Image (cartoon, rainbow, N blue to C red; front, side, top):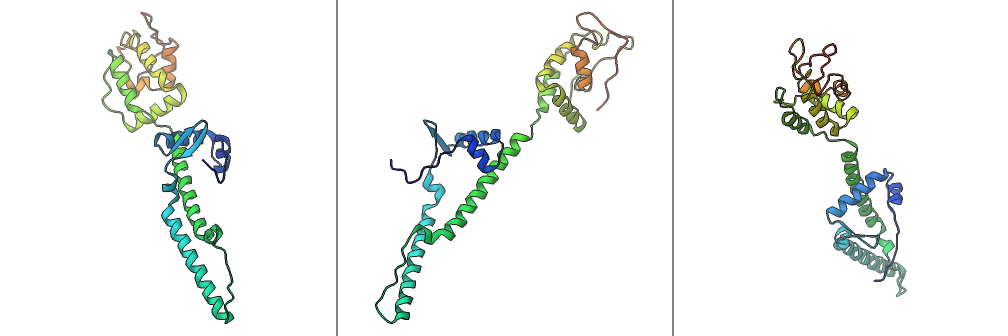
Length: 228
């Protein structure tokens, strides 16, 4: 296959060209690959359906307009000169530069919007509130069930995940469910609940054994959960 032009880009050069963080460029390329918009062969990135994206029909119309414009210009030159001298203007790719440049600009803007959309998805975390509710209800058999995740609970979950990480919540649930103190064996018969466990400070205390587990209960250091 003969190549007229060869442009070599790496993930790093694409990140520089688009002024976009490298992880977002990698995510965008992976997304385009999954959508079959690009293919990678032997470390070469190829755009699928290149002619489709280049709109060859529109380019051919531009070239036809260019030919007609050049022909019209020649005719006017002959009329002005009053002779058969022909002024030749070569039909080149440059004659359609203005129109093609506008199309290229539109395409670049579309690409920037697509990459910006991918970037926003990558930089704005999605919180799985249902995970917290289902984990609590399935593991914490000794506590009242969580029936709804309210807006206040969602905020508490976001704060929890930022400090503790999502993966720790199941461990917190298991520790609390085996804690005599958290399950009601205290001087006030108080039990922990969903709101108590999604508080990062209380979750940390549970994991550190402050509320006891395996038969040990510390009745001098508990706090009732806040109703959300």
